[in-house]
Image (cartoon, rainbow, N blue to C red; front, top):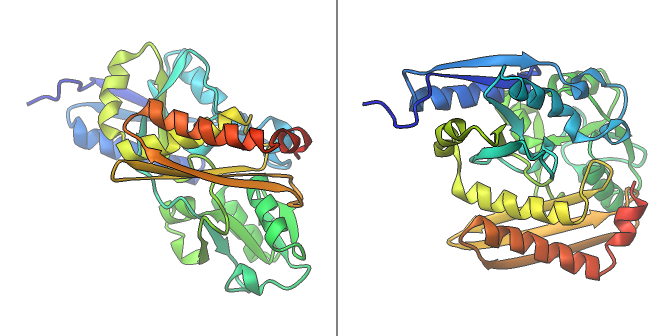
Length: 314
């Protein structure tokens, strides 16, 4: 029996890095299982974010650099959907597009990777630690002011090669990406949210399509995970309300369990000398309530003087 929303053909736009291709293949496999009679194809796209690898993202336009060319492919009809790491998706989408599904989250934590040291606590003064994230940088500088934090760009395998070549003593990378690429054995320690609060959406995959493609939205909806949707909706609402971007060291992590949603937030100066932390918990049944919880935590931050951190970062 055919599924009522079975499409004849779906083309998935994806970046061509190893991680992006893994993510797109993962979604293709899920869709093929749902719609065995459908043709599910990949369209590789090189984004501006992939081409510019010698400068920090914050200096060249932020995370949207990984999304725009994929959206163009959908606008032109060359692709029906795009697969993104949700943490790379800007907080404000163009009206033409929507997030049709958010897939169940992988491990949202940050990972400590090093060939020489077993944990952050073991790094000596002056040790060089690489990260691509102002969020991670601020939390590192706050907790370990004597280590030297250096910028890090490139895909996961490129970063690991730089570590192996001795350019860094350690790195902080997303655990989800390492695990998805079969590099989980490179993780020396997982950083709990209390020690390194994740980025909004970290570990989750987002499926984007044109807002007017009701057929695609219906076909993708079975891939959405309700708990992940509620948690990341709150995280993104918190970030959106505080103008979160690649130029603001901001973190948000929410957990949904038994009808209750607990969100933690963090905002800081890049050098870690000034920061705000907070949390909220409430019964949440739908996206609107999740949005309100994230917005409420952001309002609390603003009442506590968050504007000083947004205006002075980085």
